Length: 165
Image 1 (cartoon, rainbow, N blue to C red):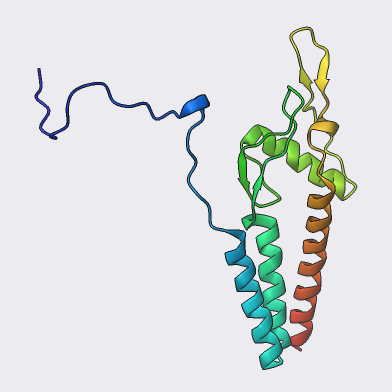
Image 2 (cartoon, rainbow, N blue to C red):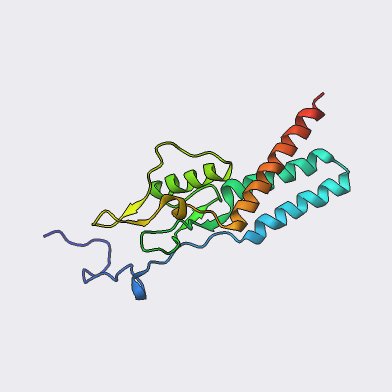
């Protein structure tokens, strides 16, 4: 036998699980921190009268919406409810299987379909439980913010390129 030199008792260790079988998730930063940063940049742009600073603020907000906003996956699971796992950014999902479904939904938003998109969920009998078109459907709020962020990115990049002349 090897002795325990760590000073801890060799009794059973407490379980990492909490009541209900869920584990505790680490806290994320508040969205208010991001919005305070955007407000500071917007006020600085107004105070300085700088359109460049305003477009940097707009590009920062677009990046935040695409890749940094703390959100939920929201892809429909085979049981028919939305996935409640955390995701970072409106473009991303919680795991690779959900990311494929969400990517297909994003392509459908701009009017394109993948040819080999077969993400239907079948039960043991081969009956489709949830189709890929339904599973990856974006909420109206997500769709609107993604389209607004895309338009903001295009406008900011065009203005910055035009300003280089």
